[in-house]
Amino acid sequence: MDRMGELGAGSAFRVGLGYDIHRLARPEDGGRELVVGGEVLSGAERGPVARSDGDVLLHALTDALLGAIGGPDIGDLFPDTDEANEGRDSSEFVREAVRRVRAAGYGVVNADCVVILERPKLGGMKVRIAERVAGLLGVEIGCVCVKGKTHEGVDSSGRGESVESHVVVMICRP
Ligand code: MG
Image (cartoon, rainbow, N blue to C red):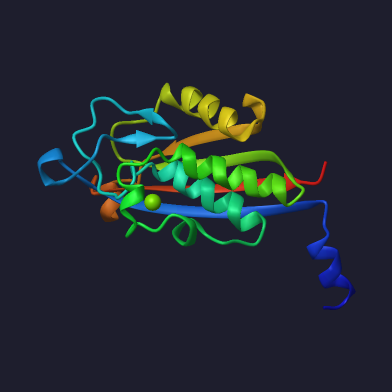
């Protein structure tokens, strides 16, 4: 490792990127209740097909946190083949990722989150989701942004067949 490499490893700031997608299905086809950022989106005709509760935002957030400290990723820690994760509350994944971030000597600075969902629109739920995410991260609400996007009717998300999320987090040494 050269000097610039040492600078990276010991940097006061690091960023992480997380992405996730879940197929959406009607309840009779195995779709669960649609939960995003720990909040149930009532009125959804379809929900995620998943081993856990299928919370796409919290899965992306978990991977962003883990990515910021160099891994492992969510699939390494919580395999969807493990029956222990059946129906599991995804906030537990975030809590474990936050624990690892802190154990590595960092604190969370902020999280910027995008949810791609054709319907229902996130609308007024965005603030509630941001509050919940801020609580999980132990940061002020102003340090979490949740943005809702449609996929303009194209591809699986646009057809209402999937839900996606992208999350970027920054962490720093106190
Ligand atoms: Mg997932």
